[in-house]
Image (spheres, rainbow, N blue to C red):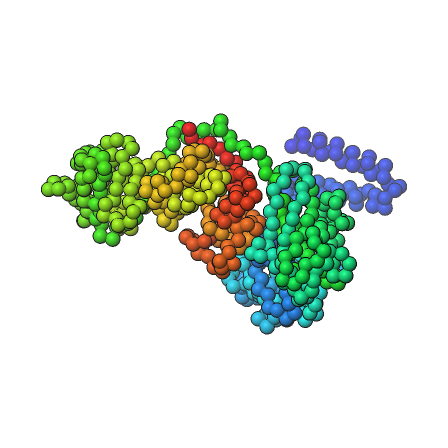
Length: 634
């Protein structure tokens, strides 16, 4: 205490000295006693209550805050009076729950920017009859807790007057204010009556992908059909050109051969009559870095804002050299995977082989040795497995396994009428108490499993097949290491709901798939976020499906959960992955099965490999964000 008083006395002396120096310059210090008392009081308060300073500087989470997630569209084109459907995902990044009803309900409002900030836009020209009020397109359909997300769906009605509109919307909390981070804008172009004179049809594809070397330039062509009533001219009256969508902006693909800063190219022919196809030739300058770069382009007609029923996406892909970390081997040996083939309705099945095979229980006791072509019937009832071979009947309380004496033995489920009833490795006949079902499980090396996958035919290009089997290997290894998805049924992966597996009979039909498996042996996609105590490799759950609606969907968007849990399964632009019949699924199954549109699109992967000449590593890195390819086992 004595030391404290001495120190404190010295501090007071210094304060008085400083005050004397400033006395003539600052009104405050003309009253030294008052100033001294205030400074001393502040000093003592800080000593007595040190936490108050910390509390004052510590930033608390705001009650209401949002971030805008995936939108169904960032740009709209409509005819006058057309009804437009929109959806937007909002993330609750604040501390309080958003209420769907009540005093502090949260809703979406049409807004405008004023000198003092946001205000409701009572003059909006996009009001549709489904709106709750003249400024409220939609309310929440549920309460949204902190950290959760919600999709808000609403409708707009295009105004009668043609032109370009920028409409703004924001979440608002009744009785509080507009929500920080909860606003967004959307560009809407309404076509006038003359637009039908200048129309194009780009076919099923509304996007084009061009592969280019880094920093180099290249000339391309884009062909579209004139579906309007006016003839397109290369020059003069009726001139039609290809231009970037943002006429006031600067293109990342600008080339010195362009006609000004935003016109890419002109028609290659003098004119294109209605019903004919016209080709635009243009040069692009690739950015000097690897990656994918997308820009919107449009066909411009005289006197009109544009002449296309939607912008075209032009993507330049600059692939990095293929890199696989061959020196990284994180597993000592090739994994053995357990595949759930099917559950049995009558808890009975018959097995055979063209070579000698053993029937054992799960602790290795040999129950039968059966000669080539010998038929063994196995049945489960009330905790007992009954084996019948000719007149021999053996009972076991443990599940039963069939193994060839020769490691290359092919086992057959003779009681199945399908031609795909031949399998490498081991077949296990097991009752699962958790479900009450009896399963036939195929246990075999992972690479042999991949050779029997029926996710593709035999005719795909090599890079596509390598892409597919690498994704399938990653998906299978993920579940093989974690052993949680089908733990109650004693297998790692299902032969139909996870990945379609038909076994040895299908393997014989697809030698090109087998070659792709052999070429990429052990190669998997990995991500740091996937590394766990069990998944030391960090292999990803490489979800894939047939096709999508022009972009892949994120894991969180389809199956929910923490939006940061699968950072490699986020939405990416996928112009080549669009389903063609119907244009794209209007619904998809959430929680399993179906064309979920998460991760890789098989349609897109095939076209990137076949039409664009891209390699399997580029395709995988396009669909799975931030991954690294490694050779996980020898």
